[in-house]
Image (cartoon, rainbow, N blue to C red; front, top):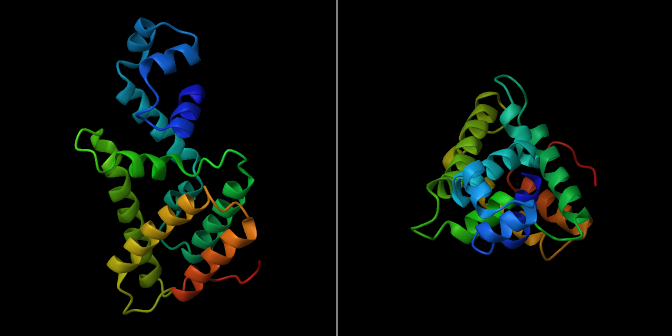
Amino acid sequence: MDIAMILFWKNGYEATSVSVLAAAMGITRSSFYNAYESREKLFGLVLHRYKKEAPDGVLTEITDGKPILPTLCAMFREICDLRSADPDRKGCLVINSVAELGKDAEAPPFVRDLFSAMVDRFLRLVRQARDQGELAADTDIQALAGELAAFLSGINLMSKVITDRQQLWRTCRSFLVSHKLMVEDDV
């Protein structure tokens, strides 16, 4: 699974054929199909595993009553740390996959669902933050959830070109401050 994740992450779904996967794994194509059934199914397994390890995974652990904004700020800091330390400039596997395949009608359906799930998660968290008094009562939670998803996508794509941690964090900090999401103001 690690080999497949690295290949999909570095090369994208379309450029990572069954032949490439099988060769890298040291198995035959037949063994590949016996183990995973299809490239699409393996890709789904890889994305599922990646989502558990990704820096935004911490957002799924927030329970009712727990403050949202400190965790949100910490997540963006971690993204800046991880992306700036990556010499391969891979960005986020999920965002890369949505960018590569989201427009394709033949794409695995779960790829488009990934972005919808991200917006839904942000909507739940923004609603919770508003209800807990962390955000103003008149906050447009639909718009803010969409903006958070778009910004998360953008900072991950930006990190493929800009790898300076301070520059990435200044961008995140500016977004967080302008949307009244910043709770700690350290660099």
